[in-house]
Image (cartoon, rainbow, N blue to C red):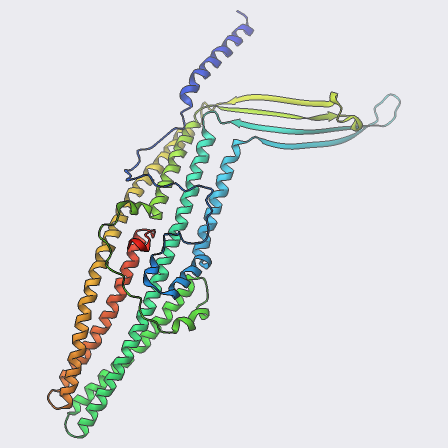
Length: 475
């Protein structure tokens, strides 16, 4: 048997071997990990969805506060906040990367040309000869995605792109929660300022009454000194409260992407603390947890890494390539496009990595470990989400009971002070009774303001724990 026959036989068996591998290798990229348990399939967001710089339509929970100023601030913040702008840039970067990863689906076509005049004086008649060689070629390179490597890499990046969209929605939910909290804190500080001023006026009247009684010999100097001390102590708390108001206005300015000077005058106008909505339902649907942007983002990332593992497996199989060119080449520019000057080539080829120093093995292992890590993070995120929702739900409902109890105590304290002052005027009670009643009233009133504020913050935490997405009509 000659060498040519042996070569032909070897080529035949190699071809047969390759075609027996193709049916099994065609599933090289079809890798699915052991996913964590899911309640219901989440609704996938199309990569072509029109992402607008607004909150999702069902994220309207702050409207429960029925405060048009807060509504205006949030609508302004979702457009001008810089964290939101950065989140949108990340989406655009992920989409650009997706397009880059999809580009190998299509052939690479490029044009090349050259023109090289050459002077020669070596002819027999000693005359200079100028040769004008020119070439113009359209080249083509194309990898055929036989084993799905390109498809898997593209699918992986698509999931990362959709995860970036969920991260954007997470930024929006966090922004609404931060802004609502800052606004509630502002109105709470203003209410405390109002309460403190009212108590200062009340304590001033009692102080003047005590000083008058002291001058008449009906009260001791100690009573007069204590009345003045309480008055000055309460008055000294005003700068601290005013400082808190300024800080909250500055924070609101940062969140809406504006300097606080532009909004200070409008926010300094005292408005009441938003009212507490009714008690939150205990039976919140469990599937709402999986609507949280961080949970949905983790799911997308898991899917993306699963596709990446499949792509790394497909790297183990051969790559089929098609290269070629078409164009013209001639030494005579005037006859450049003549048929006899046409040149072309189509060259299919195969490239199969036999040894890479464990590069393919370790690359696949690294991607698999990333996937395992993300699955663990996903499960941890779910548990944390459940904890946050349960805590916020219980705390909010209990805070409403606390508000009711403190309101009763405040009303009783107000009645006690009125009776104490009346009896003190008639000489039937000592100033110590009035002093104790004044201190109790101020404490109860401040505690009531703090409880109402804390309750609203717990409600905000509840909606943030749910990832927004709970319509007002369902509350």
